[in-house]
Length: 118
Image 1 (cartoon, rainbow, N blue to C red):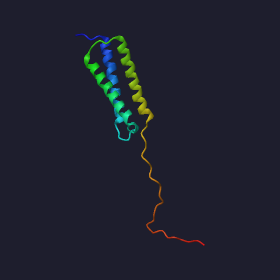
Image 2: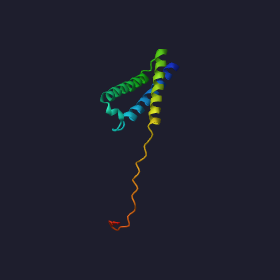
Image 3: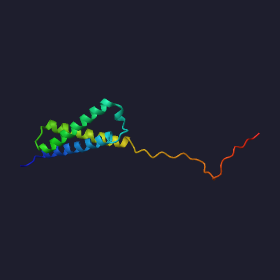
Image 4: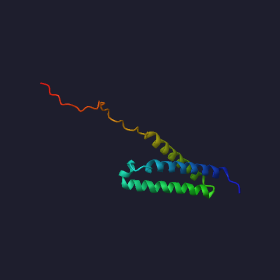
């Protein structure tokens, strides 16, 4: 069985799509304090849509069928969109540095005295 270039390019596009969708899933839902969890229904819809995208792209990889040219173009467009979303979510949300401790004056070990000035 010989694979046409369109089948190989479609498998490559679907591989890129699956990897970038998984990265986006981990970036959005990977930590409990994500902003998406403030919107309960949006979080569920986003999880379902991303899971369907991942499953569909993996199924396309294993199908080894020659898609119509329009489907191939659509797969490339969706893969590019997910790559951009994945990259943008990484760039726009930089790692926050640890909070600095407030500076307190050093103590010499002696208790402080209340001194009244008149």
